[in-house]
Amino acid sequence: MKHVGQRAASRAAELLDGLGRDYTPQVRTQLVALPTRLHRSGLAATLAFIASGAHKSGAVGVAYGHVERLMAQVVGDRGTRTGHTNDRLDAAFFVWLGSLSVAEYSALAREVGEQANWLKRLSEARRYTASPNESSEGHTGDDSNGDGS
Image 1 (tube, rainbow, N blue to C red):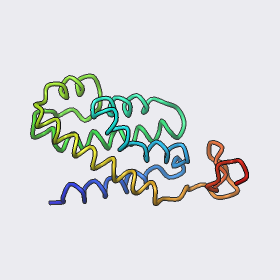
Image 2 (spheres, rainbow, N blue to C red; image 1 turned 60 degrees about the vertical axis):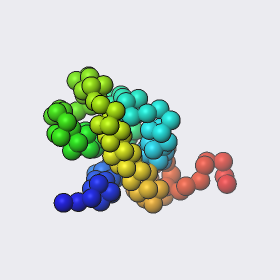
Image 3 (cartoon, rainbow, N blue to C red; image 1 turned 90 degrees about the vertical axis):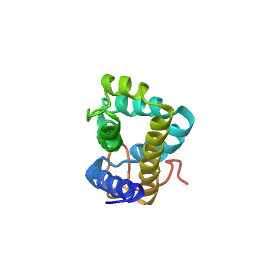
């Protein structure tokens, strides 16, 4: 059986590999911001943000769709121990989330936080997939901020 951190690292790597060409600077920015968003906004608000982002168009929407499924897996790991069996972050999920005890909610928040941290770490280490001569949503393949510096 894998430790929570090992499972989170493995899942984060699989998610990033699955994004392929949809891994853009905008996606990287969103993934790197997840732990901060979780810390500042809390578990329920962050998961609602992820679920709503999954319906956006373009690479960011695709990425949030992957993140939504990943977070549903994380929740499912813990949820099967506490009564939740839904595999989506939908209205039924948020009703279930509100029914958790403080201890259950805190444990779930720690596991989601661990997953968010691994997404951040691996996103920071990853390069974009577009080559310097190709453009993906305005990305030219370099890491400059577009002002010539």
